[in-house]
Length: 586
View 1 (cartoon, rainbow, N blue to C red):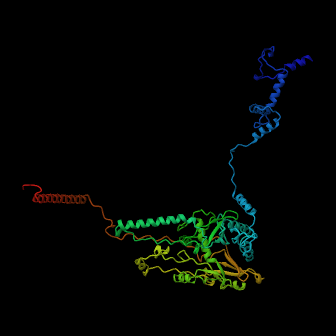
View 2 (view 1 turned 90 degrees about the horizontal axis):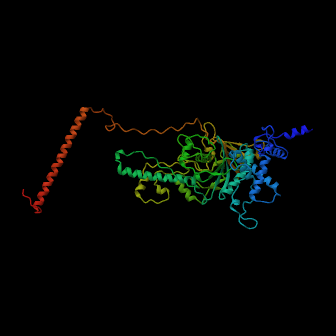
View 3 (view 1 turned 135 degrees about the vertical axis):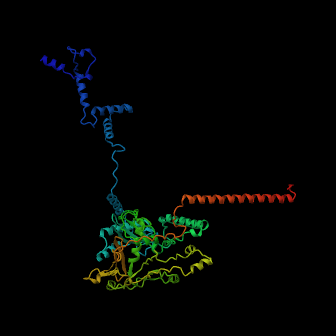
């Protein structure tokens, strides 16, 4: 029993850190050190506390040491909140760093769209307001966003669905909510309607059409820079022409003069009478398209291009298009609107109040341009509206002239006269009356029947039909355009309710194959003559003879100058001597 106890007492933890300075701990052999009793138990407990379950988790010994160090640093004598202090220190270790190594993942396009549409759906609806109501129940006037006309998109969807065209009903519902947001953004907009959808290669555009009152049209900020560039170019042209008149001889002046730039129609008139807004998806912000210019219309007629879905994309074409995709989209919308906006015959009539202005416009070759809704319209039967003769439908949008405008602009008139300034120069008036003045361009007048439209090859320009042959008394008259595939018009209730809608790629249907615009003819070269005719180089002997002749000529010229100077000096001296100014004996 004593031998077992002696063996147990001699057991210890061997290691350099376990060495004791006490000489009594050295064994009789003088080579091993060991601990006994409480010291050994203390060291074993410490080693147990310093053990770690994994390399990333601090040991219990480190945790307790940190708690004691925290208490000593704070100088707190209260030890009742040790558990709370332990919990806080554990939370500090679990807190992620302020700048993690992994970047924040941005939202995808589908997530942004879902968030935008969810925000749109959560907005409260506008209060129901009768058409003749001008104030609320408490007598206060209606706010602007409540008086604006929000179109009935669901009614439009029902009629298009009956006609077998249009978009899914879900898109119409979302578009109805999106138009409500558009009304809140632009409370001054009037006669808002859903124009249609233009398809693109990577994205599509939903288009809304609005109209303002005469004094509420906003300035087109997108054209400010272009107008400034036009003014600078005009000044540069004037300066260059003045320089040419003074410095350049007549035989070296260029005979070519660029044609005058056709001005853009003022906001609220012509092609810029309506304002168009686009969005890629219902719920995303609406973007206003800029005004269209005649040059953009002319170039858009010469190219065939699909939109990409990016308004800032460059339009790569020949001839080059002056602008980005937003300008090209606006030009195509103007062309489609001018060609496919139709209405039942008699729904609109010419405005009798502006007869004097219309007569003046007719004399200028523009035709009558003001139409209003006829309140005495009796309606047309659906059977007549669906007749293939197309006599019951008319165009109520002005056509686009080859010049790129709805009204012709005379390029020969002075600039001041076009701007409304009075010119009293009789010479300019005589120049205007010269026989070489260009002939005015005249387009089809307003309210022209569709029967007068040109065919597309062997196909008629429009196809008219009923939405249902089984119940014609409740059917809808439908028109489909063959010029712009995707343009539709429908009418019901004897033509009192009608609308136009477009969903397509924004490309015109041609009779034959598309022929790109050929480049302009090159300018003629200089006429043949001694100034531009090549000759052989002279030989060295001929150059030496010419050089000797020039030297002899220069010597004679210098000699004549010396003789002339000497003669003048002698003559002046003689004159002064005769007048007794000086005395010289000859």
